[in-house]
Amino acid sequence: MRIYRVTDPEFKPYGRVLEGYDVRHFIAALEKGTPLPDGVEYVPDDPVLSSLPEAKMFGTAVFGGMPVQFGWCNGHNTKLNCLEYHRDSEIQLGTEDFILLLAKEEELESGMLDTSKVRAFLAPAGIPLEVYATTLHYAPCHTDKAKGFRVMIVLPKGTNTEKPEITPVSLEDRLLWACNKWLIAHPESNEAKAGAFIGLTGKNIDIASEI
Image (cartoon, rainbow, N blue to C red; front, top):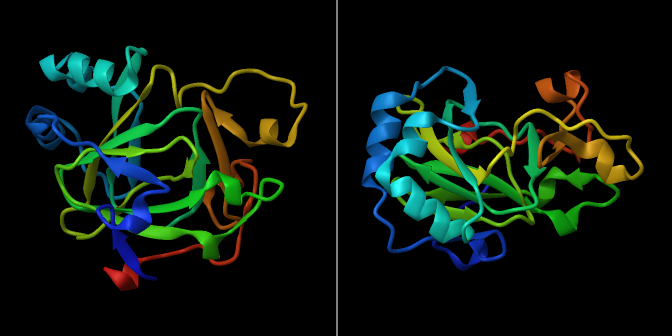
């Protein structure tokens, strides 16, 4: 599988690099204050990150004044497993290089997506990214097993928390997995076994041999 860089023109439909922001304190807080599990762990809202002096300015500027949360996704991973989307962009910032497996919401057909449409992008350490709301994404992948990944995740407040109670009236309602989180799973994933909508067909991509 070819791995592009987020600075390549191929990334433009999926997101963009955010320039001009001082992210050193975010990086330091991630490195010193968050774990590096063998698997993947996600925390939607981390009080240490949220309390940094830079957090208010950064969140207000990037999300235009909307209430936001500063969380993280850390660990080790090389597989696709699932894809998700939100109604808003997601900001990501890694302490190490990491790889994103991405597709486009417009490529969904009745909630289904062939994994051959997924593209891989390497994000350099210390570079903040905006992943567009229309971009299907999920857990980062590491580039170095010894280092894993620590990635700050900035989203509108409440995203990825408890699923709201709704009566499904559309296909998309069946994809709702958490607050502001619509998810499609590969049949091999743990999420599928837990009842997530199975919408990924084809190979469950594993980039272990490419890194």
